[in-house]
Image (cartoon, rainbow, N blue to C red; front, top):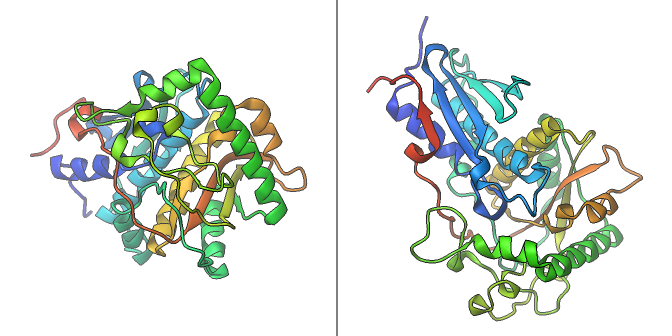
Length: 331
């Protein structure tokens, strides 16, 4: 049978794709271990890069790791494998969040996989204004289908619901920037020029909406020295709500996979995105973010979608810093 070598070059490509995933404050809370005897990559939580005050339950951590798993699966398919993903495979190891088996070659090469793989390297969080150009309904339908493929729901709220979600986000911003513990933790993730390759460099911070209507995460309130002039954001932002039927750690991982699938497909279509996670960081506000008339009912992420600049990638840890090869791979 034809087999694909899991050599050092392939491992580099796989992990490089995985770590390109988004994470809260670019915390990159993942670590990978290669089980060479079974051609399995383990995806583990890196608790030392968690954000415990803002994310005490680990919901954002699991979403981040789920996004990395989606990238890893996409890269594996692109390189010719038929990867088998298992989420939370061992209840005795709570930090082992997923395994990806790479022992079977793919029987077909699908064009969408190549497009999604290419999008991994172009997807960036956008913190600047979008244009007023609407996203075609056919594109929105494809994004919703991408979420369904990962066992999640993506829906697009109407004007009244958008306004309600923006008010909740603004209230979350007020709480986060005035809470001493939370503001101190968030401030610590804003990195200077000689900082490690994680966190958010000052050059990646974005402006605030001049009208105050669209509450982007206000890093200027945390680090006034990094203040940027206000900008005119879109008056009618396109919001998307990502939800799951249940609210367990496995659902958070699935939400992360769905989120990244949506973001990569959006990138393929030239649609940019930013993440409005603030209201979900406060339990009472997260509960209010639910639309009781829709099911599933647990909101995992609010996205802002539109057309704008491509943006700049935030730094990533190098592959040797996030992977542990238990056995050597072919070189």
